[in-house]
Length: 418
Image (cartoon, rainbow, N blue to C red; front, top):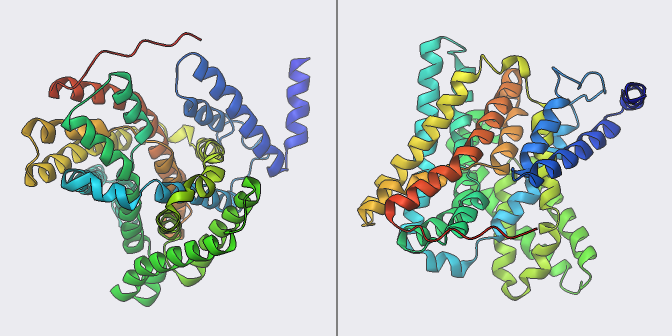
């Protein structure tokens, strides 16, 4: 009976991507809820559900064709997250964080990008696997993606162990601005490596336009959205306005050849700066969609997973994880030492930035859609997906170890009863 029901489901879904996507999301929700009940991260359920419907498993059987429509959906979901990243940073916050936070964020992002890109390119050359322009582009883009972290995982560890002190406060500040720094790094590298507007014009001026144009477009979008929604009080209407404005900013960015994600991040930052007293009005409607965005990104990333490439890509995954951790430790250590941070803080700081989450997955999905990476897009997503799961597992352990080393770990909070 169950087998007949499964076959009927497959027959109904086959050839209908919308139905297949619905099956994908519902399966992800069920698995995510189950894993969360036993103490695991919900995103792992999303990933597993996606893998079940990947091209090597049930994907072809249920008609889940990923070409053509997933790029648009991924761009939209990543746009929502970029808007929230921009809105999470306030002008007052930037004034308070001080040189330790800014130096730490700049250092760990730069370190991760450089060490991962160079390390993976060296591995590709040594192994002789795609030691050409495509291999270089893959190494560079993995370096760009390595900058992103998962602030929620780090904050959860700090909260769980009642961490207090210079190290903990600096770490909180860095994770608050890290994704913004990482997004800027990704934009710069993607512009240089993957081309787009810069390559078409063949000069650095167009690369500069891709960045500055995104800032201008994002800021003007915030002004227009604020003006259009000044009289709106219903949350659902504000939500419609914001989603429409985000999509308009993404689309306009593509038309004028500027960075879409940077434009939307600036959109969120500017809107927060202009309407500081109405933050709840302008960001709560999109915050309620954050879990949906993460679920879509993780399940679709899982659906791009290549089971057959798991073993061949193993060395690249391990190198990515190791180089990323080393890069963050080295970069943060050098930059914090340069601005006079305590030695124990500079030495162990990067260990608190190993977790990696939805932003990395979204960036990998966006990069894989670039024409320059068309032949290796699935491999890029597979590497980042596996590495993200590993980083989410080992990251909290390393954060706790760092807190122990600097002597800022307090009493563990007791588990609350269900």
